[in-house]
Length: 292
Ligand SMILES: *[C@@H]1O[C@H](CO)[C@@H](O)[C@H](O)[C@H]1NC(C)=O
Ligand SMILES: *[C@@H]1O[C@H](CO)[C@@H](O)[C@H](O)[C@H]1NC(C)=O
Image 1: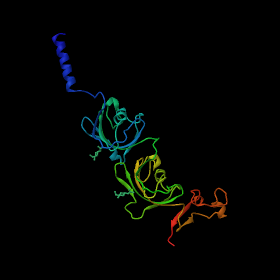
Image 2: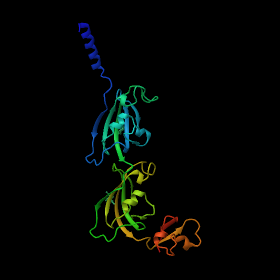
Image 3: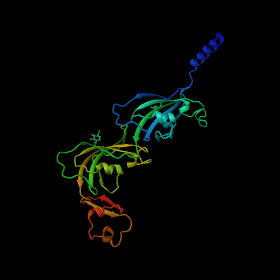
């Protein structure tokens, strides 16, 4: 190697060092990890998260879930997201904050996306993870306390009174009947509350307290009064339980009364009408409290 060649190489190395070019891989900075992390994001999990997306070069924002007005929902690891995010979100806990820096070859490449992302852009995503769930997830029930004496537990068609607090996994309340003095009332097995709550209230003793985690497919699904696709946490306390519909309640028919009434009520045709049949969902029966 003569001097010229050496200088050329030296200059080349110098130029490379001054302008290091794109990162070889994503960089993940987990800057806020919650103390309790019972579950980490795995391939094929669904997640709900907030994010701010900005350019690495100048820090300018290009997209944000907050500007869209709702958290982002996706499935991880199946190519629905850019490769950098499919990989960068793995292992994340609910309520964790992390920064994922994505080089162009794991993002939008040398093409970019129409107007939004220019070619060869390195992207920075600040992410706050709200929920993780999977299609196989069931309702998770944890008993907090249970009275020593429990003669019987709740079954379908029972009429119950209960207290509840409803929150998101962030702890943010979306609903609470507990602030009111009067507990909620419902008939179990009559689809009057979301499926997951029916499940969570089953097999419960009077006085028992539970914590119930309900994935979105057991709750409101993608829509609903709470944020769409949210995992819900309920604190429950069963106050009272009665077989069927209690005294002091009466039925009101919605629409025309079937004729003859008895045959219409006797769903299985056994010439008897137990309360289960009366409260069956097949009839649009509305129970209302009446003080005699
Ligand atoms: C996004 O930016 C807003 C405004 O600066 C901030 O309040 C929010 O916490 C950021 N979210 C994330 C996930 O970093
Ligand atoms: C609901 O929250 C309040 C306040 O934290 C608490 O006192 C009450 O016991 C909770 N209710 C249930 C059913 O856990």
